[in-house]
Length: 107
Length: 212
Image (cartoon, rainbow over all chains, first blue to last red; front, side, top):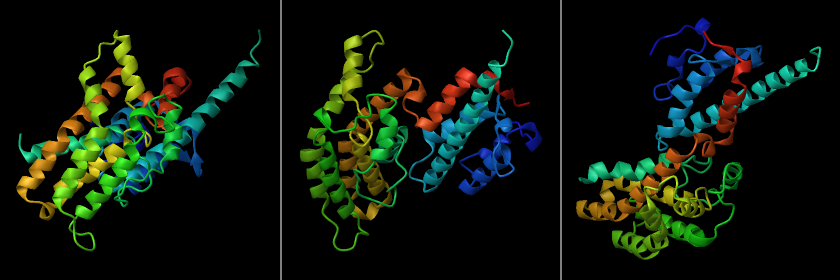
């Protein structure tokens, strides 16, 4: 897997749920998507180094195949679900703003 | 097939379910208190019922009973472990009769997408969550752990006998689960948070920038 710096978006390597402790995954998510102490909408990006990559390469494989007998499963599941919930809220805020902007367009 | 290679089949079916965050894995007994997760799943589809009816009417109590015997079969339980014969008897006389419908459903596979009747039967009778097959999956995981991690509890022949007894049902569950996963979008069975994010990305992803 190509290694990416923080400036390149999500450093996917750091999100390997199989080798990283849950708290490190949580820190990596916060470092990537949080700014000024809260989830930052402008950091929500698509593409392989954005949300698509995070879902396809990290979160879906976790829910599909991570051994539930490992004690870390529960912490990681909670972290990923919380992340998705935060991302959904930020995403919906972006949509609301976009729709509101449309109202000011000249007919 | 050897015993060692058969065990993972019992454990892997477990991974196809999204498990409620409480009670596992510290709680060895199957807990029926997973209503929060059921409510989440119930918004997705009808295969996560909110009450146990039909094939599932008696399944929770059977699972609870057998899970208790599994727990008492462990050598590290305080007191004297129960004999393997009791566990075999409970599986044979209580558990497997209650799971007969699982083998019937497996008999439908592979289901042609155009076979409306078979698809309707599968959708109506293959139910997940705590009022569906959730307790069975928990029980099989407990049993799998017991057989895999507590070799002192059984002789080799007893262990093999239990695996041979349980695996046909575990395989049937796994095949049914794979059918579900192969025939619908994952947002149908993913937790609501994941499903929502997936839908937002599909429908509104163009509003976001692209990561370089």
